[in-house]
Length: 320
Ligand code: AKB
Image 1 (spheres, helix red, strand yellow):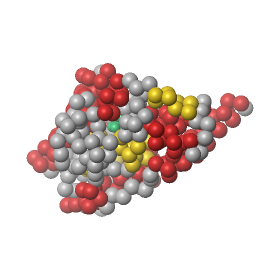
Image 2: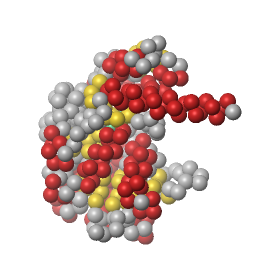
Image 3: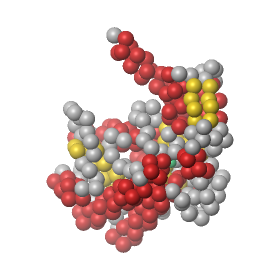
């Protein structure tokens, strides 16, 4: 089998941090190159602005990269504040990677889409893979356009690009940045630090969510699936769990009975309103055997355990 050299772009981000670890476990540290726009001193990552197409091409050529995971993106809430930049980052980076993949005949590309591609006219519950898709956020529009570009490069040039429409992702190791679903992470930190959280969504605004270990496993499973099994070349619907802020607060209160939540919805509530509350993912289940492992209860217990441990370590370091 051909040796694989993997480039992870956006490796310091929410998905990138954990995916890089998983890829290195599988392919070996030396075969997985972590790249980001800014890197921490002493890190073994390379500095790469994905919008610098010349440098991107050079890195892929010089390091003999065979697979690219393109994770750099601007999410929904920040995207509404910076529409031009969101479009440029989310779409231009993908076009550059797809062009280079075509030119160098790269083995595989992974690019994340999102449940944000759905809009107010899509079904609210059990939203299927193929349905009415009319996004009304910059982020959603850019991800939907990206899905079409993936399909186009596969159809016209045979680029093996694979994609998942991630729900809101919940993780304890890396903070999210600028998403509408970020509350579902912040709430855990606040619950443990102050026992109180003010949520920017209404209590009943239900959204599709997924715990990061499930998301990482899904990504690895999709990328391992035989090419002939991949019937969706835009992006796969993927479901984990669905909950509203009040459900999450109740799950946290099972562990921290004194935890309190208040609601002060802002513009992000409108964004969340335009997305489905739940997703149907039968195509992912059929094509590459997708099965989520974490529900709300299991995810909540695991988040509190890990964030609690991290906070203990931080507190101990500060006190020492
Ligand atoms: C966001 O909230 O913008 C993201 C997403 C749903 O893709 N987490």
